[in-house]
Image (cartoon, rainbow, N blue to C red; front, side, top):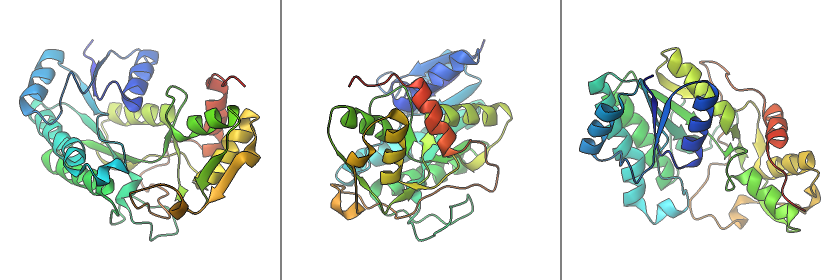
Length: 282
């Protein structure tokens, strides 16, 4: 069986693709950054020839939003140059491609969910790099599928916001979270399943995928705490400017879609996260 080739295979999103491809009976090859530098055209061409995938998923990328302000060259290479290199190679080999972008391509000026046709206006280095990646991918490969998503959480890694909150509360600590930053969190298993469905259906172009719902970071932390039976009163709501963020964040970056709502409601996703996740020791 020809595999799905996943770049960034050691990261949160890449490992989730590995798990869910296996669950769906799809052959999958995870390539870590050390194994495949997506900005190296020769390495990309060699990987496509060697693995002969029917689908390439680009789960690689620079994800440290605040560090990007001081690490612009690397951020640009991983989020703009690399995806463009991969897109050109996939176009040449006629292999479908999925690449991922972010809600941080928007400036937060709207008070209703952003749709695919809304004009991007990123505030920081990370958002600018993701927008440039989108533009370059679709210019090099109009058949590519570019998915904007937001605020990952899931049961299989220790570093997402929801898991970090529950770990801190289980240890007796408190959590400071922004009460004035509105987002549409995305449950990683739902995102991966929907992305695979779109690829199998031959979809292309720009899509927004996030669980249906609008919340602040503080309200998300409290909702997760209540489901886990943790002390929600130890979630301290603060203004975003009081948090140690170097990069600017849009006050409102909720994603909606005119192409189709493919992911279930946020409340449903949080319940499934809680049912799947192994509880932290108390």
